[in-house]
Figure 1 (cartoon, rainbow, N blue to C red):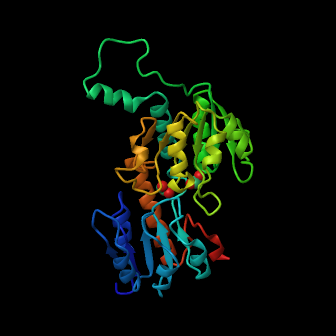
Figure 2 (figure 1 turned 120 degrees about the horizontal axis):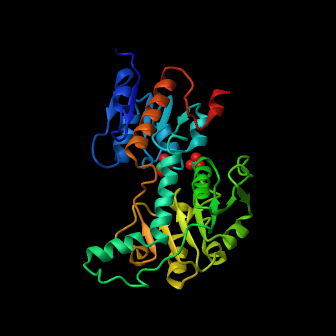
Figure 3 (figure 1 turned 135 degrees about the vertical axis):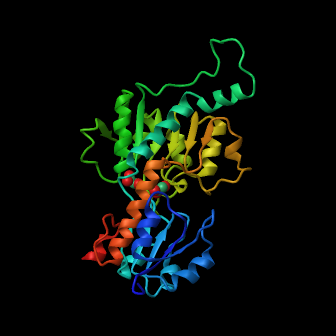
Length: 325
Ligand code: GLV
Ligand code: GLV
């Protein structure tokens, strides 16, 4: 068994993933309930053939350079902004991720945020727990509507398309903006708009684009100023897409009516961050794909990606297929 590949697993994954990995690899597992410290990862990676990473690990050029025998990286996430994909590709290292398996759950979470924000669910629950619920009132905690409003989706990829499908059930008008028109948009009844027109026309703007140099702070002061004062913003991708200083100003000054964030910059958001003082800002701790079944599916797909690559096979879900050319 000494010729089994050696892998580093930076956090215990759910589902059957550990069992799968232990079946064909010698595993070094960081088994604490916090992210693996950089120094420990740098030490462990020096001997490793494979890395099973989390989005909290910086898989950068320095880490890859410290790993002379590394042949595969597999991350238990779809987003790879923490991974230097170009550096891995130059070294011929395939990088796996977990597309598709989290689309439906993440779209559900986007709708949970939209509905909670617009119908003031969290404020209502707090009101009851605080013992403030008196006789029924005609104007208690009135909010906005989701049905028959206009939804603008920025980033119409795999998850954005599922969000659009959900929106049809709410009889929403659907607009989207993407680097290039989405070929399935017509089937989804979604209409392409320029970035500026989408912001100006939408009642609810959902950000689902991946974080890259081009999308960093895409939602800045100028973008927020283009939105309707009654509009809401939901970020379901990465915190870096939204400038938090501009957002705080927009929410305080009423440029928009509310925001719901699954992701923040920085992440985790400090408990004394000014966004947490605002009643029209709802924040949850990066729970987009956090159902029991979906997290297990992600963990198992990431295990399959790593096992395949280390056995010399193509990864089922590889983010840099150029390494196979
Ligand atoms: C989670 O945010 C992911 O990228 O899978
Ligand atoms: C990106 O995360 C996507 O699959 O839409």
